[in-house]
Length: 374
Image 1 (cartoon, rainbow, N blue to C red):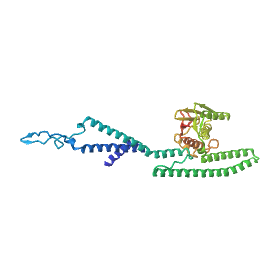
Image 2 (spheres, helix red, strand yellow; image 1 turned 60 degrees about the horizontal axis):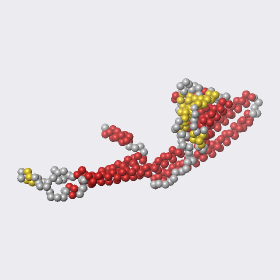
Image 3 (cartoon, rainbow, N blue to C red; image 1 turned 90 degrees about the horizontal axis):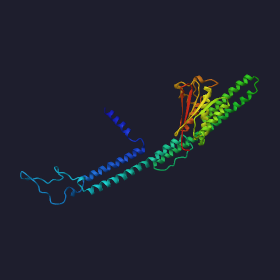
């Protein structure tokens, strides 16, 4: 029973306490200031000067009961003790004004001190949040208290190690890409010397499929979008241009809605939309692009009229190299990275990719891109 009550008290305390370091420091300092003033006032009235308890002048005559004199009224057990209300009005006003001014000054100082002490933690949290979007961001300044300097130094060392690992990965991927492309090129040249036209066609298709899978895998591992610059892009013009390109290839793609310019990584955004439109055409034969622009985010929806996906597969299809069993064929299987790359690009922009089955059939892929100041 006691443990249950203690747990309830802890839950109630956590619910009412501020959830930030700044809020808890400010609350602690303000409570300390108020308690100190209450104690000071209590001691001041308990230890007030004696002339407030015994005003000057002759003592009043004592009354007699049964021939015995009664003690004069005073601060003893039976007499009233003078308090703040017995003081002159000017003294009361001056005392309250003095307490109010000091209390307001101390609360303001406590508020500023709490903000000053929590500022390094806020700066560290902001830097960690930005690190996921830009690994090449400037390092944190190593200043402030000893604890802040140590935390900033460790954070900068972690960022340097991550950059070094990414550089080594890029060099490895470049070497693997060269080693894999070289035998594919030789196979493509040898295919041209085959006398059987049917065999040539089959070899070309297999080589093209291998080339596409290698390119998709290496691009995903390379993560080239991380180093791309951020620009203010006319998303409306980009989507219209993509639709025109697909129409020129004989694919039906429509665009609806309007979108204002957005600060993005241009090549990464085009690749994200290319993957979504390509999936829609591959599985549904056509694509419908709808732009939903708002003050806080831009949502780009790509819908197809294919068979859709089971509900339990909507999240799994965005995992690397995962494909629904029904799609494992040469014509529409792919490498299982299109939605993964699109989802990764949306996350790099601070947004997300969400899939849902349309009411009238087909699949809707909604890419959400938050708006930030350019």
